[in-house]
Length: 82
Image (tube, rainbow, N blue to C red):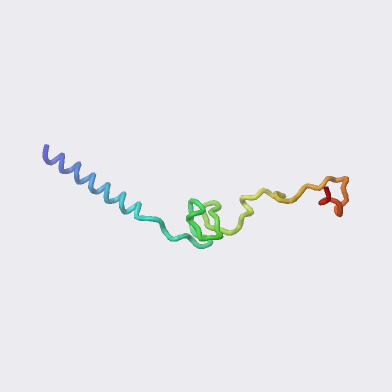
């Protein structure tokens, strides 16, 4: 019985030690092209897209987004007028 208890304690100690190593702290923010899981994993000005740090937002923005729609019957010079 005593041997079984020692084995359990040894396994718990080993497991605790591995957890401490795995959770040792945050890594430095990544450069462009580095692997990531979230935007905080990348340097300032970069975002995490498809698990890579990048400044290219085109995969996140649908084509044509941000372009104002101009009605077909309004001349382009009047498009901004209320």
